[in-house]
Image (cartoon, rainbow, N blue to C red):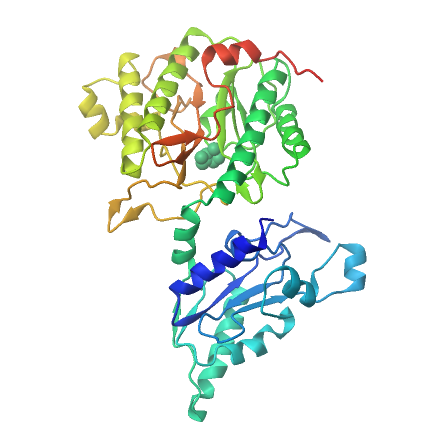
Length: 439
Ligand code: GLY
Ligand code: MN
Ligand code: MN
């Protein structure tokens, strides 16, 4: 958890933008996995961003217009039996004392309190549709207020989504948030290097998955930002392959897309390397094209250029490469305009990165690709995938899948590659694959 001042400032900044209304945000739900077992709990990113509160069954009510109590936190009350079985609960007193709430209440009283707190607000900022149970509670209470309108009570007659405001705030990373991202990318880069060092022909993808998890957890990271992709051989041509259960052979490439969290911020890094430590001629040719495209696209990242133009730079370089290999025919202009490269490059080059791996924030403003600004963080992740079900290209490239992905902070003078510690030059990779680690 960051300092309580950080959450306080975020709430204040959000409230400044919603003068006319109240704002209600719920914690993430607990999801049952199977009898008596739940999926690992992770707090909702927006809720955590505004509270630092990690418990389920909680709600944050912001009342910007209130004279005194502007921050109201609803949470589970203390419960000795539950605390013996499951663990510590902040309870109502803890929510007030440790999380900056002006007032805290048991979550079971939310419906009643809501009717009182919402009186006099014209607008309710609430994300309709994200949790059915919450929608039912909110609409029931609004209905209840509506029924009392004859007694002169005013209540919110408009519901607006607060996500736009929060997303825009989260898009620009503060010093503390950049530090968290640096920690996440550092630990994740070390995991990638360890995975390279531990890979030899004959081991299974799940062993490398375990190596990554060992490295991340033993560095103090609480959880992965998304499931590890450990994709060897032809599995690398499935973009989000997560089975991770194939035995690797000499001559295979291994694509690893893995990033872990620090303080709820995640890395998102991909590296591809030969299982036996030496790229074949064909693998090296494709790898070099992807690396060249990635470097050119990263070099392009700076304030003032559009998000779309980063993709355009990567597409141009990949298309040049595919043409030079004889994989695609026609002029470069035709390849780009007809998008014939998309048979081998079927995803975008970038997305925002932060608390969510595909982080929030608008990509377009007034229908135009948005310009990059300092404090934004994006991935640059070109790839080439020669799928077996795709026809009409030289057989020697069949089954090759390569992606290289780094995490880029836009700075005032250009950019900083947060994940640069993960090796990606051919010579650096070949020097360490299968070499083991010093204990
Ligand atoms: N790891 C998912 C992605 O790269 O977008
Ligand atoms: Mn990504
Ligand atoms: Mn990724």
